[in-house]
Image (cartoon, rainbow, N blue to C red; front, side):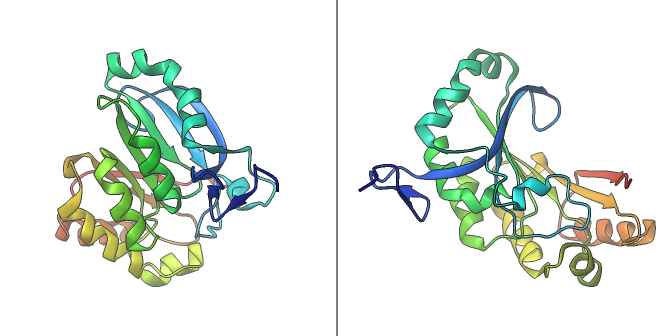
Length: 218
């Protein structure tokens, strides 16, 4: 039997594995505080019309499938940068929360001083969020639009799960002030009035940190 054979994200030895798009070191002020390393996971539940990382949906888009020990060996060389700047690891993708068990296993072996950020659409089953949340210090949530019709038109998915997870996170985030919600203006899909309405709904839910920007479509 092949000792490298994988079943449901686990090797036969029990170590969880995850498919990656890549690892990007020495990032500054892009995705979290201090110097960060981006760990980008393959796979996403959405089918956004202007997807920035379409390789996360392609069967041949996997750069490498690794276990938590291998990932640690790839990032621990920057430990001094993380400690000196208050940085750490940013989980992105794709949708990183789909790999919540892997994130839990990896974070459990990292130094306590490392900070963890997750870039997420939050459109995942609650169990994934609950499993990862105890380890996550900061969130960057790409909400698209709170209008369910606009959201479905752009992503191909319903946003009820997003709204439910936002409500749960409002009382369970380790640092609510370190949750940033992205509110894009998406050409041909929403307007400035739509975005204003989304922000009003989110503010009623208690959220205060927003990143408003416009997609550049070529």
